[in-house]
Image 1 (cartoon, rainbow, N blue to C red):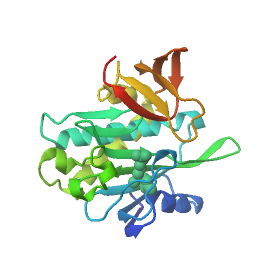
Image 2: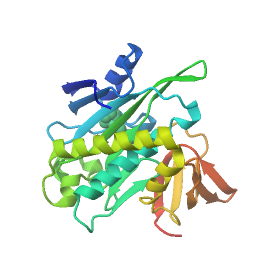
Image 3: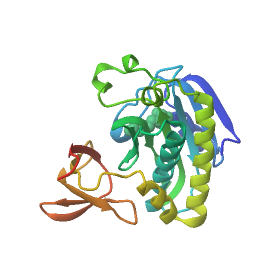
Image 4: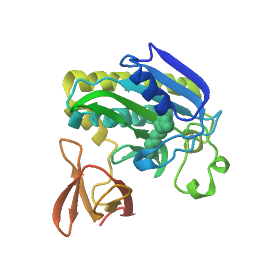
Length: 252
Ligand code: BTN
């Protein structure tokens, strides 16, 4: 991964550039990174705040051979890589959690987001782009007011500046290891490591968001072998495959 590197100072979105390169035939593992994004994209059509000089924004082109329904497993692999790298870099006592499926939280606030646009033709995945953003040294003041209570950075959580390049290198090594593990050994091993950071069991949640047809509210019972969130709602046990989770209470 990263043997082909495409580095930029400013881009609209590394995901868009990676998508273009993928359409031109760029190989599996091509890495596109930028210091700043003017139109960073999040999940569910949201934007991702991407100021320059502080953080990591990158996209990896994937050419998975797995069936389309298994491609999202890469999101779990990436969340494990980010969470494990954060845990290794941060002082003990900072809690590193994964909010299903792919937000990495430090002391309850989001420090990293991951998305995975997938390009399918005739039922086959032609390429996917694993987009990862990590707030490394963003200060509280740099976040727009509406994000200040929701977002954080590694530097804020550590109480000191984090070496962005060193963190990026460590993250990419772990990411490569997780993706290799996923391809060689399947999802169970990745999911086991992911579960270590999943502490939402018992939380009362509401799942909705753009494109989600029916809002579901209930209590989280866990995550099944395919990574679906299991929520006990008034209709029974529901398997949630996509959506935005709002935590209403940490334990029922
Ligand atoms: C989310 O939290 O909703 C996902 C955010 C993903 C952001 C990353 S930053 C690098 C890559 N380029 C983008 O435009 N988005 C992803």
